Length: 512
Image (tube, rainbow, N blue to C red; front, side, top):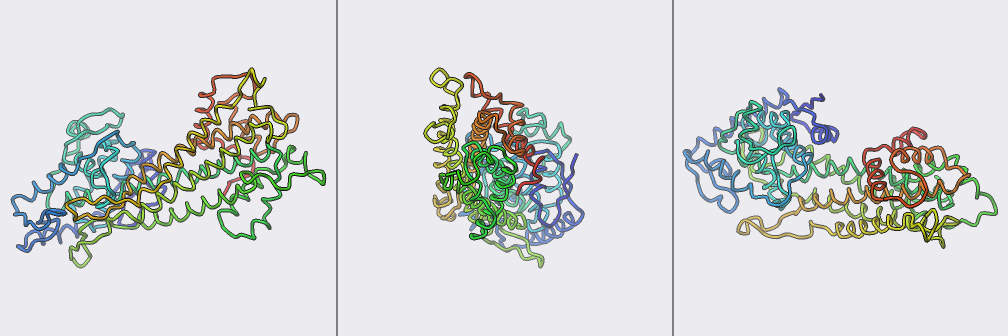
């Protein structure tokens, strides 16, 4: 099994995906353990002094004015975990919780939080044992970070609350830790706060969404190429010299993909030449590189923000190399919240354009010779009429999900936390949006594949033909009406697992 080293430096996107999604184990480096121990020595020194130090010998948030005597400090750290583990609603997905655990571990490993080495090692042990704390949908305002979700993780570290074991069965943290041979922690000064005060939940969801969207935008280009081909559109508008007149990198990449996907297509060749009147296709065909490209450029910006965040040590207060322990505002989730909201906009727009291309293939007035709704016997059969309804319903949902969460702020903690990011909410809706785009792209590809089959004896290009063949492993070709939902589900699976992109790339090489 893959083992990811967690040191004082940043994790890579692939590290997060490997641990969160594929169950990779982690190991704290010697450098990290040394940095953690050195920072802890500074905290122990401050804890022994009579002068109050925030998060070490004081209360938290609006209660920070109270000096906590030494004999109550362990209770203080456990109390903050218990009281802040106040989530509600459905359980959050395992991959999100594992990403959050890994990213909190990464911050602990920087030596800027003041926890003991054993605390970081116990969090790593939970990851390696496949123990996933139960975290709930609602509770985080994205400031100070993801307090409630991280509190549910910290609760498991002290042997309390519910978890899912490696088999996915729900059990108590106490039982799961005992069975894994992990000793529950007794928290000491600063540790409760250090385990809770981070942007790890929203960052983990951002990284996973970026990973998914990189693949989905390639699939969207495949769907667009198949739709252009099936509707006897022109590929002249994708020419490199035309695209270079507007030098957006994402647009160039998308147009290059479309050119390669449409190479050597007998269908495209059938209507070339002076007799072809297809100079100006509808925008949903002609402008695909502009929309898909802008989505790529937005994704690149989001990835830049995520990379900076992966290189951050988010806690409050933090332990500096000279031993100072200083309060700060780095826990505020705005940088992540903005790009989470930003990404939901192109997701909705790419899906909206895909739905428009799909609708054109089903309409005899616009499909250039295809049967109504691609039905076997229109009137007796409905073909893919209602599959487009499903697309439209998803697109409507995506437009609602594109409304930003980060423009809202509801003050909390007796006005101490009087401006919050709502980044967790932005992350949760982006996950739903990515799922929706997956379904919309799958239905377009499914529809375009049937349209290409109906253009026989003309053959599609080698790349799009390979996609059709891969789709046919789960979705049958044209014929009388069948139960459509299983076909949609199969197409969604083939988009989600990358099979259709792999099929196209087997012909044209890696897509941009």
